[in-house]
Length: 93
Length: 463
Image (cartoon, rainbow over all chains, first blue to last red; front, top):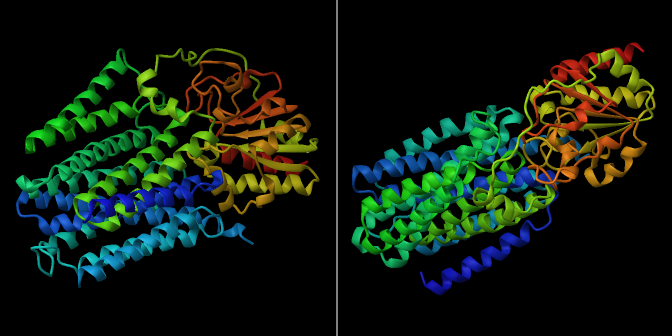
């Protein structure tokens, strides 16, 4: 990819990231952190790509470990965030 | 699948992540936001299986291994997330964050081994960055997990010449990083990973008590950045977008949390370099306290006009949120004005108490934030502090140099009477003695918060 394109994506993503969470009540700090935490579990995609590339046993072993860890991060993260938010449900009325 | 379609689906997942973060910022849309995020992540994962990278073909190589590893991850991750107690959620989040950082570091290492001599300097630099920050995030998160799980002391761990050791470790991490960029070997990379793990441990050890959630949030932002860097290495726009979003929003969130707790972010981050050993009040010191029975408490409450309930971590531990609501409802039916005073960082995480009381269906309008409730303590007859300590400790206002000095507190010391429900005389998470416990207007009710509250409720009913 063009270096300039990468820099643009990077910088614009920073601004979007700043913008979307700039006003959050402290009530939601924990679920928001947990949700963001689950989003970076998308490193699973990267782990699968390197597992596909792997040619030696060492590489494969490390990528399998990476896939396990990333899956725990992603799936566990979304599930635990949902459980936290489930408890707010009763109050919306 | 063509690269264009693959990238378009990646873009869709990126948009889903933006909508997820946006949704999570508002109470009404939070749950939906999280589901949108999960959808985006699921979509992104699914689509990898239908696109073959350069020099590869479908189905993916090592497909069995990949699917097996995902299954193992699911078997570990889902039950952990579903079964965890409310009280243990913060450390679980820390742990999930740590494994994410570890995964990013492993991905970078594998890609580096795989590319060998073909790696460009830029790729090597990003690999070095990912390995350093990913390993720091991994080992640092494990330490925060152990602190929150109370597998180790929750107090700042400070050793002689600690700051020099930490600084020296950081310098060697950077030095070895430079070595990897210059000489491109597997051994230097592994040494780098080892040193970075060590640095993560040293970085988090001096952080104590109330600062732990801020550090978790910071490490979360770190992991986001490593994901972005591995996105560069793997030529994946999606990883760059998702990682950067988390890095940026995580940084803002860390700052917001630090503000809510009245901490300077700088002080928290560089505590490792500036920390000095502190005098911790001698534990088990023999001083008179006034302890009461549930009946005494019930009588006090019966004649009160205004009562403020201050919940803390002890409430979460005892799972007493339903009992406390029962007590509040009973008092309201007796015409007593009842409010909950919620400190933004009561418990182990910002918002912990809101989540807990929401579970017991406590009406929102009874929850008063710190700024609202503090001016009313002067007119409050009884403040009931349930398993909270540091957030009501006047030392935060009166004792410069104590670890929580400067943190805003709930000023229960202005109330006419204070009731502390405590398990023991042990100091709070920050490990500081609370003078309020020895105040003549304080009454202590020892025991498990749920059991004590149940007794108070029945005593109050009998009056």
